Image 1 (cartoon, one colour):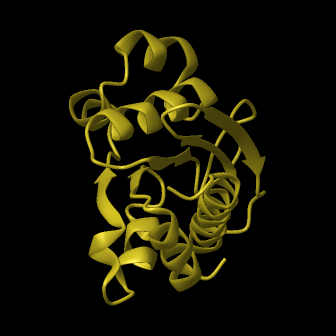
Image 2 (spheres, one colour):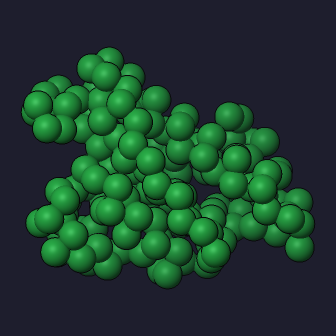
Image 3 (cartoon, helix red, strand yellow):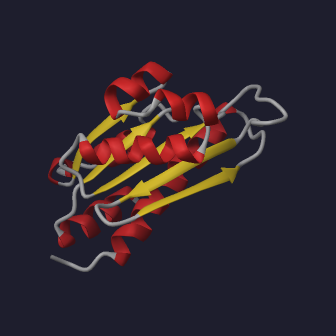
Length: 159
């Protein structure tokens, strides 16, 4: 999805966007803020690479991290909910995953968990991109998150 089109659609509907990113290291925020004038739509981005950052900046529960691990749908949900609480956004997206190299049998390289949160909905999903290599997994995750934002914007009625 084209970041400029996402911003234009959000602008028409009076929406604000924030991101909470781990394995992508802010790539969604970069894609959106590369567009001149994006500050009226993109509120902020949280790069929470460590578990401590997830807890401190977004309020992710230590229990959730211990029980499910950082790469999990419950953590992705708490990241996006924390971004919504700690921003002026009406749509937040979160990304946490194993970009590689490496992984394990339980959490393989290319597994990325996403959450998309609005004031009334929470959507979580896991995508298995496979062992594409670190750079390609990160790009695929960025593009998937942008598509989630675009889909959410299309479902929200204008103000």
